[in-house]
Amino acid sequence: MASAPATATERLERRVVGYWILGDLLTSGVLGALAWFVARPFLDEHWDKWSSAWEHVLLGGIAGLLLLAFVVPPLSFARWRYAYLGDLLLLRYGILFVEERAVPVKRMQHVDLVRGPIERLFGLATLVVFTAGNEGSAFRVPGLRTDVAQAMRDRILQARGDGRI
Image 1: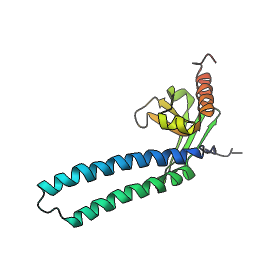
Image 2: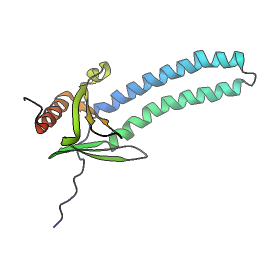
Image 3: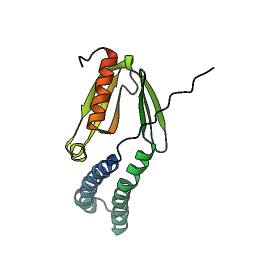
Image 4: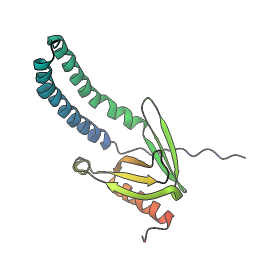
């Protein structure tokens, strides 16, 4: 009798949506400001074909970036799943292209926790796992409560025999 395949079932913290939106808005704002206040005047001065139509295209692009900052995070949250079962870390993520990973603990080189200033504001952490091999040698599990991320890190270290926990 064959056993059921392991699947990633745990969800990220819902607060990750706000964290992603804020991060995407900051990125979109910086890119939009650079485009509007640096690229637009430069193109206006040095490109003969620059016109108000191109300004509208540029504004549409900036508005599109800002719209994506609100649309992509909830969709990403809806798709993200993870699980730590036995000696496997399972991941499932992606919006258009869904990627599933099953990483054995024995392939993990080291594990880090990352908590940037905005993540700390939301009470979140990202577990970063580095593995042996070339493709996808590092991957992230974002949007974890800090205590959950620390517990996963400690559990992985213990399973590898590296942790004195």
